[in-house]
Each structure stands twice: as structure tokens, then as C-alpha cells.
Length: 191
Image 1 (cartoon, rainbow, N blue to C red):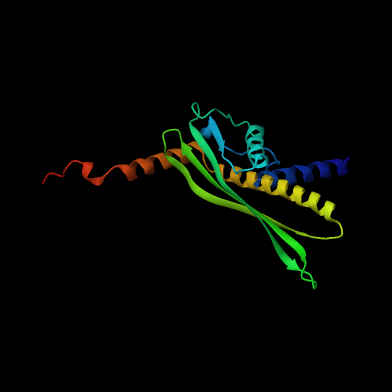
Image 2: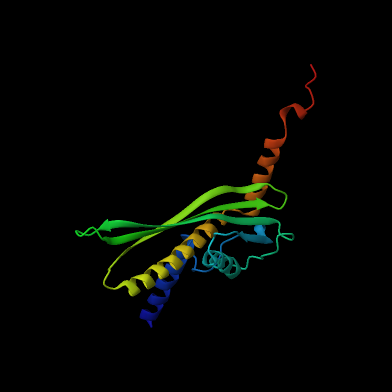
């Protein structure tokens, strides 16, 4: 009986510790509802896998997605680049290892044109060993890595949206309004 009580206490302490450090189950989106309704805008050459991964993360988190006309905010994903380079060479001057790199631009704009997140470059990379005697298996491994890189970029995009709470959006709007209001529009000071 005491052993079960000790286990229960230990589990409770671990759960409280995980909650306090900001731990969240994978797939649970921490994106604020202040960004709703949100329009996801992926333009070619952004791969479908990346767009689907971002959409899935948003939908899993319960974020309301809308069409371009109905959205209050627009998440734009642009300028996808993919790179594959030999990162290690064998004695016979053949590639022994490759590094895959994906990068993309992210931007969030309000429906009335206020930049919420200015264009930001996100990237991720992964290396894998290449064995020319097992080409098919290595091609499959590379395809799996391509999907993993898309998933990682999707997670980076979601993490960029996390700080956009209602309060933060209001701060951005206020500072944008102050920045575009010229100083000479203020009434003159009377002596």
C-alpha cells in the first residue's frame, strides 16, 4: 500500500514538473486563438508535404482556418529551397555522406496589411551516410529524411506563431500605428 502511494506521489511530482517547464504533448498546438481565422498561403515551389504538415499541426491545435477573404490573419510560406551536398568523401573520391537542407520564408500579415511577423528565413538540415552498394535503401532513407525535414520546418513555423497572443498582437498594432503617424500631425504647442 505504501509502495503504491509513493509511486502515485512520484508520478504527481513528475507531471507537475513537466507542466511547469512548458512541456506539451507533440501535436498539441500552442497557437493562440487570437490568430483566428487564419489563412494558410503556400505558394510553389513550397512542397505539398510541408503545407500539409503545417495545416495538420494547426488543425490538431484547433486553430480555425479560413479562406483568403474571410481570414483576419494570413500565414504566408514562400521561397522554398532544397539543397543536397556531399559532406564527406571516401578515399576513392565518392560521396560517403550527404547533407540535406530545407529552407523557407515565413510571414504573417493581418487582414488590413499590418506585418505581424516580417519575412523570416527558417531552415533545417540532416546528414545521412551514403552506401553506393545499397542505392535503393539509401533513396528510401533520403525520402524519409525529406519528410522529416518538412515536419521540422512545420514545427518551426508553429513555434514562431506561439508568442502571438491577443496582447502581443495589440502591441504590434499600436507600434505600427505610432510608426506610420507623422510627428507633424500633432497640434502645435502653445506658449
